[in-house]
Image (cartoon, rainbow, N blue to C red):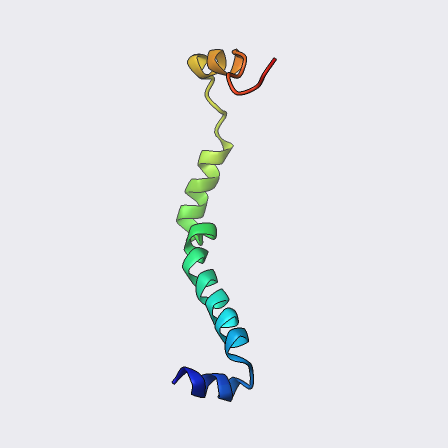
Length: 72
């Protein structure tokens, strides 16, 4: 079946496999990189993003400390 599909596409096996695996990979990853929201969900998302960020004192203190991962 694969050989017939390769012949029908007029390509080499490797080219056929890579092209079709790329399409399959894009489909699998699409739901992890693109999110489609209906109108109500989009309005809710926008409302969350318009809110002012909270000031987390513990996080502020942590981020003001020197990084243990950088020599200095």
